[in-house]
Every structure is written in C-alpha cells, then in structure tokens.
Image (cartoon, rainbow, N blue to C red; front, side, top):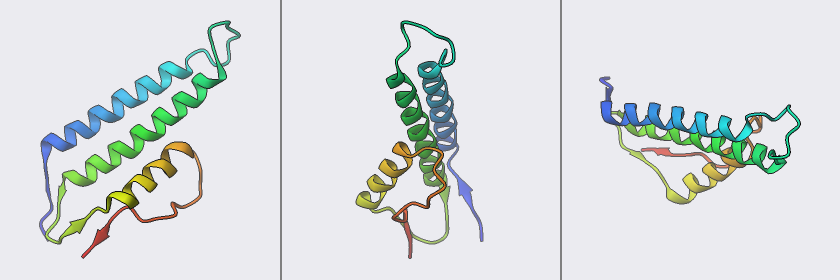
Length: 103
C-alpha cells in the first residue's frame, strides 16, 4: 500500500507547530516571576494557542498524507474536535467525536 506525502503540507505543518509553540510560550513567559505586567489570562491564552497549534499541526499533517482509500472530513465533527482539543489541553479524556471517517 503506497503512501505519498505532500511536502508543502508537511512543511506547513512544521511551520504551524513552531509558530504556535513560540507564540504560546511568549504568552506564558515569566509566569513564576512576580510582575505587574503578567495576567493569569495570559496563561490561559498561551494554553489555548498551544492546544490549537498542536491540533492544527496534526490536522495539516494528516491532510498531507495521500492514502489509496478515500478519507472524508466532516466539518461539524472537525470543529467539535478543535474546540475540545483547544480548550482542554493536557486532558487525558478522549475526544467526544471522531475527527474523520474512512470509507
């Protein structure tokens, strides 16, 4: 079973992961240091950005894979999955909906 990867989407996936991680860490920088400029909201923003970028990186990487079977992504399930993964980073709970269907 031959599997082909789209190099453009693979590089985009890596780029999204790097930029998302750096942006999320920039929001959480200095969390332990007492500072008048730090807000607890920054930690939540950083967690949501990192969670969203991890989800996006995986989703783009899965789109880069060309399989010999048809793969269908339902937009409603995908949006639910994004919300679950973005707003519960670090959660060990499984996602309530699958992210795609294989026919």
